[in-house]
Image (tube, rainbow, N blue to C red):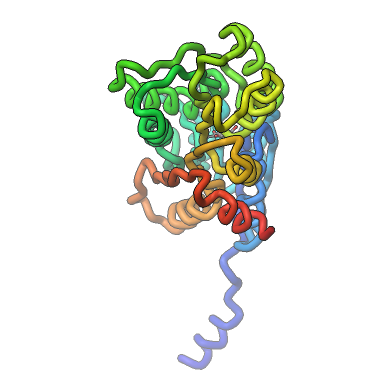
Amino acid sequence: LTGALALALSFAQPAAAITVGFAQVGSESGWRTSFSESVKAEAKRRGIDLKFSDAQQKQENQIKAVRSFVAQQVDAIMIAPVVETGWRPVLREARRADIPVVILDRNIRVKDPSMYLTRIASDFVEEGRRAAEWLMQETGGNCDILELQGTVGATAAIDRMKGFKEIIGEYPNAGIVRSQTGEFTRTKGKEVMEAMLKAEGGGEELCALWSHNDEMAIGAIQAIREAGLKPGEDILVVSVDGVPDYFKAMAEGTANATVELTPHLGGPAFDVIDRYLGGDRDIDKQITTTGDLYTQETAAEEYRKRTGG
Ligand code: GZL
């Protein structure tokens, strides 16, 4: 009997490949594209059939993508929500179809946490705190700051602002003098920085730029230079993401610090999906991945590590 059993088992099919739908925000930043590439590579490595959708930063495209994943009866859905609100109807449809939903990176605001399986993300408030702590140390707490906000309504922008303000609020001689959204992109970051520098009469008295992501900071560095000031010296630059181009800027002295945000969220997401599909119902509601702060001291080496340069 054991022989027959062993023989039967040897023909047992490998676990059937699962199909996962991924509603991604877009490709607005270097971090975002690394995140997408990392998820696709991880799906390939695991033999997962990934249905990928790029919403060009529009929530209605994300919702359409999720609807189509439900219609295709995928095994699981991953959403990287562009903004926090407006998700309840489509999440109800996924739940009615008994399809688990994993939230990646930014958050959604829903009253009923059973609408999604878990959220895998960095602690954006802590990222803001770490950026501010570095800047206060660097300037002795004496600093007039410009802020480039991320996408309005995005958790990353809301929470990074919150964490940064919590720390500088402890320093009477530090403050944000102007704050505007650069929508997480390089082009808009440059445009808005130009306008803010003009509004500040050129920017000579300014001390630092706090940018919610490296992409906008890289655009702003151009604007600082074109205003006749030295980025990284006349105006310190502190940001979040840790993309290679920003490590390059720090190595060249035009940027000063960044808090790394890992783009590798695919692995933990597929792990939790496998666990759920395997029957595990004891899954944490939040899986946090917060990165370290990097400065000019290690920038050249970190750049080489990330680009194999
Ligand atoms: C934050 C993420 C942000 C990145 C930006 O986790 O949502 O979106 O910091 C990206 O680069 O646009």
